[in-house]
Image 1 (cartoon, rainbow, N blue to C red):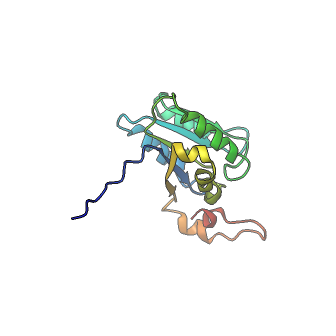
Image 2 (tube, rainbow, N blue to C red):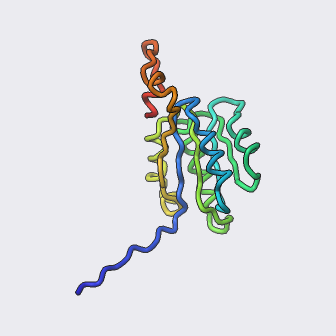
Image 3 (cartoon, helix red, strand yellow):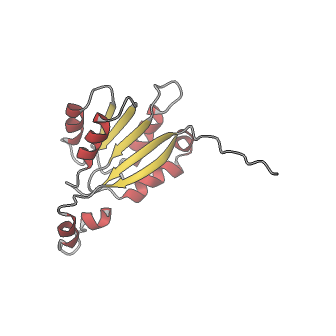
Length: 164
């Protein structure tokens, strides 16, 4: 009888990316995850679009400051700050850094998830240290149908449609 070989457990740190349109509840979900983390060590990366970010303050106010919370507010994570995402993740996950059970990335409501996901497949060093565990799309169940049906002016994308 042929012996079956078990796959070795993946030692790379899992990264969960929260996506969803503005107001969908990404920060609320993140706060819930972190307040019920049951002793797990997470790093959090919050992507804000604009100089004044509020999501990272909402997260810091709700959770114990033991989490490493990083804010990227110099652009949308899918475009201008992809290199920043790689740099932060590689620094967090470098040999000798503290152990992390996972990383959670909260994107801006304008982010296209495809380029964010690509980051984990094109950065050779990052591929060795982290794995994309999940892209979680958050929607506001009460208002999602209205948001999806919103008519936008010509040339303006309906971000709810793009995110979902």
